[in-house]
Amino acid sequence: MLCVCLAGCAGTGAPSSYSVDNNGLLSLNCAPVTTSEEVLFANETYTKTRIVMHTQTGGVVTYLGAPKNPTAAVVYAPGAGEKIASHEERLIRYAAAGYVFLFVDTRGNGAETPGYPFNPQADFNRFEKGDWPQYYQVICDLSSARKMLADRFGVPVYAMGSSNGGRYAAVAAAIDPQCAGYVGISTSDWGMRDAAIRQGYSGDPIRFATSLEPSTCISKISPRPVWMFHNATDPVIPFESGKELFSCAEEPKTFTGFAGDHGINSDVDDRIIAQWAQIYGTRG
Image (tube, rainbow, N blue to C red):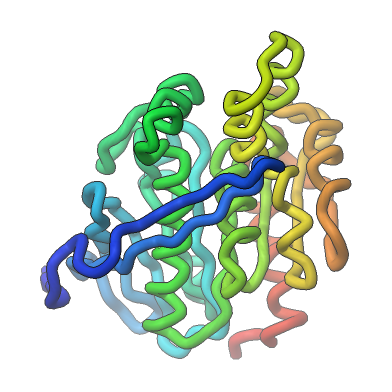
C-alpha cells in the first residue's frame, strides 16, 4: 500500500470562525486543512484511497473512490452508524459511471473519527461559551472536503447525505457557494427549533436551534439544484417531514420517491446516476 503525505502543518493560517445572525443563519469561515493519504486499491476502473483531513480540531477520516478523468464528484455524509464497509460497492459503481465518491466518516458517528453522537445540548453549551459546537465542525469538514475534491479533480462537487447526514449536507451546500448542489436522501429538519419554542425558550437557545435546521438555509442553495429522495413509508423519518423540508427549497428542485425503506440504496443510486448522465453524459 502506498502512503502519500502532503506537506504542511495542520492548523496553519487563520483559525476557523463562525457566526449566527439574529435569524439563526449560520456563517462559517473554515481554515485550510492538510491531508495524509494512503492508496488502498487501484485498478483500471478506480482508485480507493483513505484520506485523513487534518483540521485545527483533529483528524477527520474519509474514503475516496475515484475514476480516471471524472466528470463530477460527491461528498457524502452518512446517516447515524453508517460505516464505509456498507459503501464499498457504491464507490466502485459511481467510479464506473465517471463520478468521484468521497465517504466522510463524520465526527462522533462511531467509526474512526473521534467525537460524540449528535447532541444539541452539548453543542449549545459550547455555543454559549463561544466554543465550536461539533455540529458546526462537521459542516466545515464537509466544506473542506468539497474544496479538496474541487482542487484535485477540477469538477463540480455536490454535497450528498442520507438521514442525519442529509441534514449536515444541506447546511454545507447552503453555506458553501462553491458547492455544485445538494442531494438529500430520507432526510428532514431536526425539529429542534420547534421543540425549543414549545418548551418556552427564547433568545440564544432559539437562535442556536434555528442554526441547526436545514430549512433555515436550504433556500440559499438556489440557483444550484436540490434533489431529494424519500420513501413514502419511511419508518424512521416520515415522508411528510421530507416534503416539508423540500418545500423550503427554491427552484430548481426535484422530489422523488424510491423503492426501499430508509436511507441510500441501489434504487437511489440508479436515479442519481441517471440524472447526472443527462447532465454530464455517459461513460462509454
